[in-house]
Length: 268
Length: 279
Image 1 (cartoon, each protein chain N blue to C red):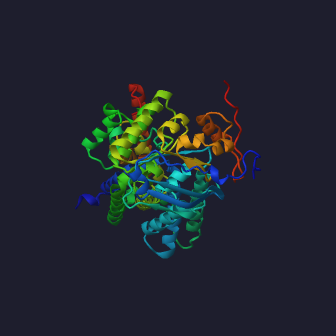
Image 2 (cartoon, rainbow over the protein chains, first blue to last red; image 1 turned 180 degrees about the vertical axis):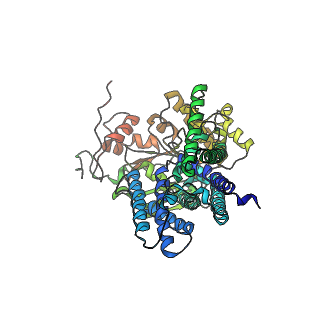
Image 3 (cartoon, chains in turn red, purple; image 1 turned 60 degrees about the vertical axis):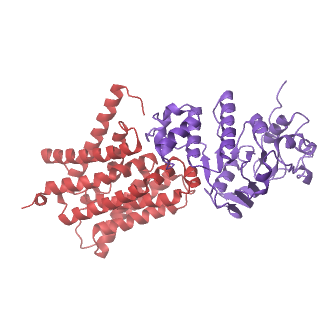
């Protein structure tokens, strides 16, 4: 009998591992205004699920491959056909729709589509748990190793270039971290809610933080709180767990935002 | 594109003023920090820079002047390696260290960033950071949020960051935008002092013509290509220069007119004519 035999314990640990990496990554997504980019990469996850069903590989592997492909496509794609946000919207929803069509067309496979769209955190196995923590840890390690350079490239691409930091290289590292996190998150909150898990804790942490680092740590903490609170709510009211986690994250953000507005603290 | 004006046929050779600049003799003889040769940059199919030659030598202050869209910022970006030219070459001295002061930071309210944390991104230690802040005159603002600084303080914080790189070349892209007149004068005095103290060269883009006249060793007039370059007072006084650009008024005004009223046969949109200043 071990602690990990309890599915709620596994769910909580999966959410915590994911949140610890999603916090800092979400801050970068917010600072760089990359929410649409996050959407495009995470929606490609559904296509990745189809790919893994087709090839017999583990879903996380397929998701990782497709997320990386999408990141590469968007990062290298023709920027001038449409404005960036419109192009990302096209890529994101094309990937989502194509993924849904592909998954449905795979005959003889019974898939819980809802699970991939909105997560199935209560069904996380021990093997899932290891994979989620490994992918999250890798993503966090990438961010930790590149942190100063990423901040510099975020503040000014020219400043970074003048100091020998290539903004292009940093963008690729960031895309890699995002793909890893998407793979980790597919089982926890699902393809449609990954961006929410990135942005909401970061936005919540912004209300209190005085430095990029405290904001990153605060976002990780807010994500953990949202995970535990969401799972609790899901248990109490029999609500779907992934959406409950995201709802809790939104509630934390709203509370902190309201508290700050009431206390009249100036931004920064 | 634009037809050559009668007063401004293609630049006669004599208009390329290359008078000796007011700089240490040693600087002229030593190897350039950056040498650009035949640089062309195309952006979205449009030629932004054509055949630009340029050298920056140690300890000189060089200012780039030009109308909006003349490729000033593009040239700076090419020189610091932020973009690769489509043709030509840019050679950088192996010991080149650039202290860059960008036009702005993409710093919106979502990133909390104190002045001291921003300076730490240069990799410098705390004591050095405080020293740099004091040197640029905002020693008391280490704990302030970057977003809460006034325009002048913000530029000084950027300059302190550049200073911490221990550069032998400062590169400043319109560093005094949005400053009032005394603020502009004080900022350029600071730049000159830093040049004297550190021996670093300075390359900047500027609109502040009076300051250009007094503070630069060399002025480069850019409009997609280098129209002319040389010591500012010589450029301003040269009869060929006035024949080409000015209408017989003072040098600073000639420069000013050149900036806006200059059109020989080049690619790009015709610059708008400006009213002559009234007495």
